[in-house]
Amino acid sequence: MRTLSAALQPRADNIEMDWKLVEKFHDGKEKPIEVVVVPKQMAPIFPDRFSTYFGFFKSDKSSTIQGQVNFNCSVLGEKKSFILSISNAILFNDKLNCSGSLPIHRLAGNMRMNELIDGYHSIQLNEMNEKNETELKSIRQQVEDLSCQLNILSKFTSLVAVDPVKLDVDPKERVKVTVPLMFRRFSGMIH
Image (cartoon, rainbow, N blue to C red; front, side, top):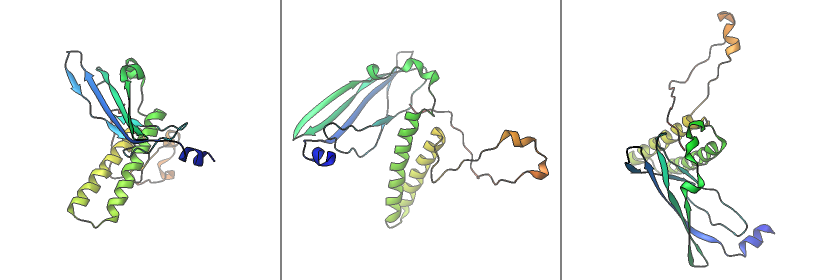
């Protein structure tokens, strides 16, 4: 009944989010910030329901972020616009205590990785050519980077864990483990 009730109500569609963020440095310089919105395809929003959207961006730890997010939609053909000031929504003074493994970061990262992997599979279904192969490599690299930054497993990454307690065991009793050919550590953090 909820679905039927929602379907009979006006909905917000043609949703667009415009992130206008600026990174301000201590020397007075400003730099616009590029934001990756997740999910890319924004579904209509029905009354008494909510949707969650994330914005990935990188910034310097010593800088401050200012700006706004413009949320534009259409309800029954009428254009609506909402503005959210980022300085009111996020307190950036506590950046040093932030971790890339925070649940909200991981949730957003997982959504983005699923989007990228869906795109990867849709390209694989098409006829392969040089352009498609380049695009597949780019998508795979993005998935690997996100996976390593946020400690989320994906179809392109793996986890090798070592139990430090068992390291003191006689070497003859150890089990040999084949380690992946590639190993990466990221120091950059996504906000």
